[in-house]
Amino acid sequence: MTVKMSISTLGAKDRELLAILSENAREQTATIARKLGLSRTTVQAKIDRLERDGVIAGYGVKLSDAYESGMVKAHVLITIAPKTLARITTELHAISAVRTLHSVSGSFDLIAVVEAASIAELDHLIDRIGAIDGVERTLSSIILSTRIRR
Image (tube, rainbow, N blue to C red; front, side, top):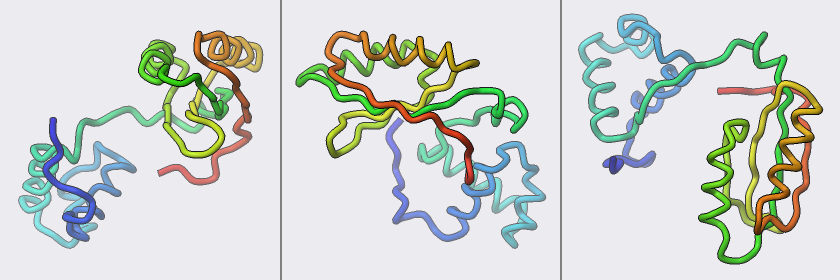
């Protein structure tokens, strides 16, 4: 789906609405309306428009802090060989422990955010990433805690 709107074309209430839905996508429309100072029907119309225009692409599960605290997470900075980005992205996408993958500027080409149930599993995961053909180097940093999550 093509996004018909950009952040610059969204109004302040639209951005506030997106922030509320990002915190709790199951928030009742009437509660959101009270928070925004709008009618319920106006809020529902805004949500419908944001979905239709592709700004809201879907809704997901937010895991509990108790569950999240049991996972070991890390940033894995990855340097790749020229002309391997598409294939390496496909291979990393197939690894469910790779939660997000960012293309970045600087001395590394990619940053993967990964999670595992233990340090040993994380070690194996990082070795698996490093073994992908075309990955030249990795540098990992374990995430000790998350201070802000939106």
